[in-house]
Length: 305
Image (cartoon, rainbow, N blue to C red):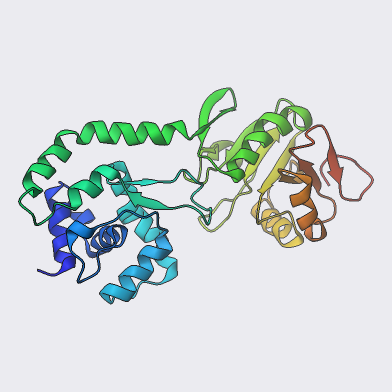
């Protein structure tokens, strides 16, 4: 039996559904355990690795031909389910961080090392016996790394990372100061893309949202002024430059409310990196100086154009 079918057999014995016994899932298990065609299962490891590393491993050692743009397929078909089953864990970084990594849990590693030995049946039985506890334990571990945030009077949780740290500041620090009594109509999360998305209200205001549209990071609506704030949370990419303004304007061509375009930064240092690319007639808010705004030109300080 070759290593791909051995991995499939292992996943089957762990009770993984048929779709999580597909070749792509076998490649993920083999890569995460560092099992090459001539590696013994007893020599399995659990180094922290990226999806990029998994794709490279499968292509180099097992002759697959996955492209870099198949990362989301690996995440959705294999890693998401493996994590929910407590077979793997992540390092708690934001999913769009270059430092985001996965590894086999210690319990999975110990079990995998017994595959094809006399200890295997006993090892699997022990793993399955404690499986629910493991799922709960790793889910709790994940929960502990979340950031609580209050949105529209309800409690939500952001996954960790600088991007979400800034989004939390936009909602809890920027909005009360510069968009008082506003409602958050949209905010995403680096893991749960549409954490808050009030489609009914957005459509009533004239938004035309398609699958291809990239929403601004945060959308706030102030009813008393009939103003919409489009806020981009910028830690590494995506400021309110001329191209982004055109994209949002096209998406909101039927919106009659006044439009305010804001780029938010965690600190002045990051703002300076992007200052030359920011569009005129937009606003800048810096979280480390929350009581101040920077208005780029024009005869008004803050208001729709």
